Image (tube, rainbow, N blue to C red):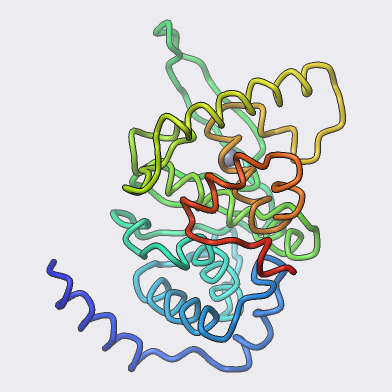
Length: 254
Ligand SMILES: [Zn+2]
């Protein structure tokens, strides 16, 4: 679709589908939105409206999805793409919301061709070219717990998956160096895994040691929720994430 047709369509949606002011005012105090200026808030509101037009948010196990819940999910998903584009969430439509944590039950094949069965409890899950699955209880909880944000986490996976699958490296912009990204992330990930192996206290969720993809998702959560911590403990990663998301949350927090 050409740029001008897409913009015309987007403008039409923005004119026709306003968001209730009371819901917006209730939610713009979320921690991950701290310090956004009026121009950024206007842009975030536009992305959120377009996102809600494009995606279906469906409750399961009798969970009723209210307008406020829809906006809560949408605007946290859109903080990641504030200075990128909604196209980062292309080729899929559905967001499935469980009342609480849910059970993942699936088979997967490892690198040696052996099939395993996984049965685990999850707060969120993102499928490549498929839905995002979230636990409402965890979304509600993460709005009160600094550093954890299940929506940002799963949508960071979605952005990562667009490029060569979930491997902790999204498609980088022209002004970025793939070499620098790999150097910085590989070194920090190896160091982080050693810390977790030794059961040392970590400043971000130790779950980040699961894989490079989880390391990227957990650091993306922290980048928006605890930017000063990321800048202090992972300065080179902070730089790479600021280049990728085209945002500098530490500046906003000053
Ligand atoms: Zn994850």
